Structures are given as structure tokens and as C-alpha cells.
Length: 417
Image (cartoon, rainbow, N blue to C red):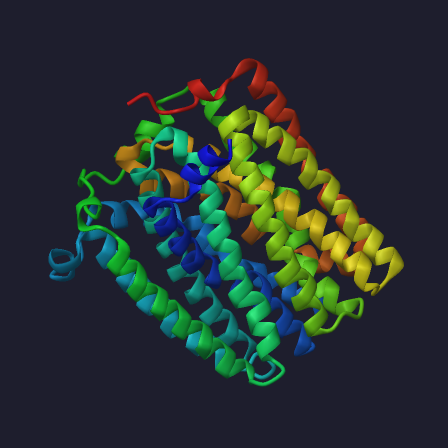
């Protein structure tokens, strides 16, 4: 068994996916986590911090420009590097530039400027995700998608460790401006490494020159009811986790934990628990199938949100912080591996960039738009009621999975082209 697990995860393709996962995870956690802690330390009020979830809108709308990235080549640069590499180079260069600008934006005096640069970082991060998600799906066969999902999530969490714990530890010695500069330099280093590791033979995609074909193929694959069911499941599966996650770091700050305590628990120990979760989740997908893995992880995600309520009751006790982080991150990793494998399975490999962007954008809608009033909810009802509400938000996905398992198995949802 251990030999099979080793072969599943330890190969060149999975290593490349891991590197791309790191590159995707750094800006994601910079916006979702570190930025929110920075704003809280600058005494920006909770309701305004919650509205900063709107800076994540590009992750929700990336399907709009995904067909362009999928179909069109960058003049001159594509001839040298190939289509995927050239787009990756362009997005990562811009990503680094705007991370630097974000660090120098001074939110205490120029909150709107901070929001604009955060939005631009999100845009280029979302564009990068289009490319790396497409490439991951294209180079792996169906049996390896679960492992690929796990390696993507593994890379995400290492990126989160860099942008999260790394940034918080550096606050002891460096200003926020210099911290964001360091993060931008790391992105540039990863860009160079990834560009050299990606083989040229897998670097070109067939251009359809028809921007709506990927959408048509997906929509007409199943009936309207089944498409609606898939979309509702994607929306609700991470909904509760997303709502809780947006407010988690401001919650830790407001109840009295220090930057170092948050870094140790949430950003280091949490990453370890997430990594364990994603590898367990990837293995569940391999041995039990995607829907079974989704059902198990869905229950874990719901239960874990109640740990925030317990932490709010006991106050800033470090052991309870570690317990909360352990439950939330293990269940989140478990669910993420199964969820990414599910989205990957739904994509036709001819249109991976566009179709994966479309599907993941549905989940991003919950993260960016519907989670933005979270700060107002907390101010009106308090932390405990807020986290109980986030728990309830995960229940619809469980009901949909159970129905799918009995009436709509994964084989009928996949592309048969």
C-alpha cells in the first residue's frame, strides 16, 4: 500500500503541480488572511474589514476572461516560451508588482488605495489560477486527479505558510512594506523555477477561436436540472467554511491573541493539519471515490465550525486556539482535496482553463460577495451566533451529496468526449 501511495504522489508531474500550488497559494493567503490581520492591527473597524472580501471578486469572475487565456497567444512571447508559459510569465510579473504596491499603500491613511491594489493582486492571482488549474488537469489522467488535487492543496498551504506565518513572524523585525516586498520576490523566484520546470511539449493547447464553445459543451452535457444541481452543490460545499474563514483572523485578533500566537497556531500548526487533511482526502478519493470523499469531508467541515463557538466562550486560551485550528484546517484540507478532484472530473480536457474557471468561480462567489457582510453580522449578533450560522450554511451541500450518491453518480457528470 505504501509503495502505491509513494508512486501516486512522488513523481515529476506532481512536483510541478506542487510548485504551481505554492505560487497560487501565496497571493490567495496574502489577501484572505494577512491583509485582514494587517487591517485589524491598523484598527480598521470590523464591518469595513468584512467588506474587503469584495476584493476577491476576480476569483469569482475569472471565467469571463479564461476563454481568452485559453485561446489566444501573446505575440512574440508565445513563440519563445509557448502559450501556457507566456501567460504564466505575464501574470506572475504583474502579480509581483502589485503585491509591492499593496505593501506600500498605507491602509490607515489610504484605505481606498489599499483596496484597489488588493483587487489588482486578486485579478492577476485569479488569472494565474486559470493557467495552473488547466495545466494540472491536462497532464494528469483520471486516476491521478485526486492526488493532483492533494498536491495542489499541499502547495496552496505551503504558500499560505509563507504569506501567513512568514509575514506575521517578520512583523517583529520588518515593516509591512518590506514584508510585502519579500513576498513579491518569492513570487518572482517561483516564476523562474516553474518556467524552467514546465516541459515545452506540454505547453501548447489547441485553440478553438470560439470563446463560447467551452461553455456550450458543459451546459449541453446534462439536463438543466442536473446542471443546476451541480452548481448548487459547488456553491454550498465550501459556503459555511468560507463565511467563517473570512472572519477567523480578525476574530483571533479581537479576542486577544498576539501575532506570534496566531502565526504559531493558525499559520504553522494549521498548515500541518491542512496538509495531513489534503493527503488523507486525496487517498479517500483514490480508494472510495469522489462522492464518498465529499460526503465524509462535508460532515467534518460542518462540525469544525462549532469549535469557533467554543473558543469564543473560553476566550484567548492558547490550547483551545490550537484545537480550533486543528479541526478547521484538517477538515478544510480533507474537503479541498475532494472538491478540487470533483471540479477537475467535470472538465473536458479540451477546455480545461475555461471550464475549471467557471466551476471554481461559483464557489468564489460565496467567498467574495456573500461573505462581505460578515463584519456587519458579527457586530449585530456577536461571534457565537455568527459561527453557528456558518455551520448551518454547510448543510444544503450534505443533502445534495446524498441525493447525488443515490441518483446522480459521478460517471454521469463527467465529460464523455
